[in-house]
Structure formats: C-alpha cells, structure tokens
Amino acid sequence: MKFGTSYSYWSNVWDCDYSKVIHKVADIGFDMLEVGADHLHHMNEQELKKLRRDSQDRGVQLVANSGPAREHDLASADEAIRRDGIAFFQTVMANMKKIGSSKLIGAIYSFWPSDFVNVDKTAAWERSISSLKTLAKTAEELEVYISLEVLNRYETFILTDCAEAKEYCRQIGSPHINILLDTFHMNIEEDDTVAAIHLAGDMLGHFHVGEANRKLPGMGTSIPWDRIGKALKDIGYQKGVVMEPFMITGGEVGRDIKVWRDLSNGATQEQLTQYLRTSLEFLKEKFL
Image 1 (cartoon, rainbow, N blue to C red):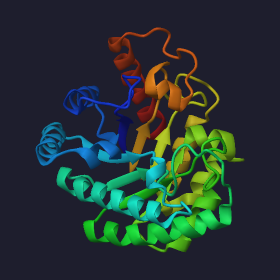
Image 2 (image 1 turned 90 degrees about the vertical axis):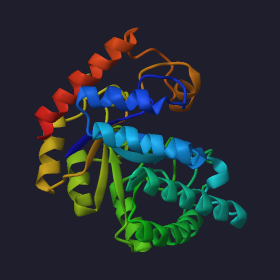
Image 3 (image 1 turned 60 degrees about the vertical axis):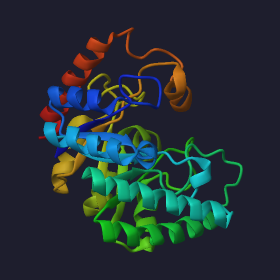
C-alpha cells in the first residue's frame, strides 16, 4: 500500500505552496500527496514542470482530487454545463500527464457539495454516466484511472454506498473507472465497513482514511481499524491509503467541510506535523 495525505491538512484555505508541502510529507515518510484538480487546471507549463520536478525529487506520487464546482457538473440537466465539465476534466487529465500523475479521484460524477435542489437520481445517473463514458475514453488514452468517491447523504444523493458505486461503475463499463471508499463516509452510510470493502474487491481503486469526526486515524475509537486493515489485505489491496483530515476551523476549508470547532486542540504547525507522523505509524501498524 502507498500511504498519503491531503495538501490542505495544515491550512484552512483551498490554496497551497506545493513545493513546501511535498517536502513536508516526504520528510514524514508519506509516499503520496493529493493535490487539487482545480489547481492543476489553472497551472501554466512552468508551474506544472516545477510540481513534477519537486514530486519526483522527493519520491512522492501525486493524485488529483476534485470536488467539482457547479459549472463542471457532469450530471447537470444543462448540456452546455456537462460539456464544460467534460472539457475541464480532459484538461485536468492532460495536465496530470505532465506532472506524472495517473490517478484522478473525487465526487466527479456531479458537483460538490450538492445543493439538493434537483434530486432526480435516475436522470442524474443517466446524464453523469454518459459524461463519464466520454471521460473514460480520455482516461484510457492518457493511462489515467478515475476513482469515484462514495459520499454521505449530506453531501450527495448520487453515490452513497459501495453497492451503488459498483453498479454505477458497471454501467460505465471502463477498466479505468473504479471506486473510492472513505471511512468517514462509510461510518455514516454502510451497515458494515468491512463488508463494503469486500464488496468493492478489485474495483477499489483508492481509499480515504479518517475518524468519524474527520480527525486523523488513531485519534478516536469508533472506526474498527484492525478489521479494516484485515479486509484490505483480504482483497489484496495495494493502492493508495490517503488521510483526509480536517481539524482546523475557519476559512474556506472550515466553512466547506463544516468544521465548527477546533479539533486540533490548538495545535501549532509543528504539532500538526507530529500528529500526522503519529497517525502514519498507527496506520502502518494496522494495515501492513
């Protein structure tokens, strides 16, 4: 397994000095860093070259993570918006190729978080599956794999458990489209997190880890980490295991993720780094 974290961990804004963060995660011992797909979309050639160089110099694999904006909604009833969304992700994947990244993940099938104004699920599936069939062709050409994130009922109505995601991917019918499960969302939606991992099987393309309140793995006791680690071994999982913690209140991140109180115990940047190091040790003990 390759262990990673999200670029946004140390901040409460959706912005990043990637060079600085790459060095941080490499020093801690991570193999992987999730970067913003929207950032990649807007980077120029020089910025993309620097990101590739920094990541390769430190041996850190890059994964593009997207919580799509409304104007890139692949499930939209407006055909022009769907076309814009397809073009957006095609550009993202082209830029991923330039930085040596082969994994695009997130709730790509719609926009995030949903406003739940129109919840015609059947129609949303039909439109977004059609959009993703088009994107799958680009992914196959560029050797990119897309992992669709299963979210909870408060963030989407389209994919909220593993069984739905598996059927959704089956209807797309591309080996380059698979599933992302997240222990935070699974804790809300799945009857049994271990059974969901077994159900995903070889369709599990990426795995997010965090406590039930989005703290770092090991900071709580409600997630059955031993059983989850065994389930991943049972299905022969050898891909990304990425922490997606959100503990700092305020700013864009606190607003969007709904972090209404400080979950870090007033930690300094140095203490946040130590939390991350301790959590990585915890996960490796449970999963390897």
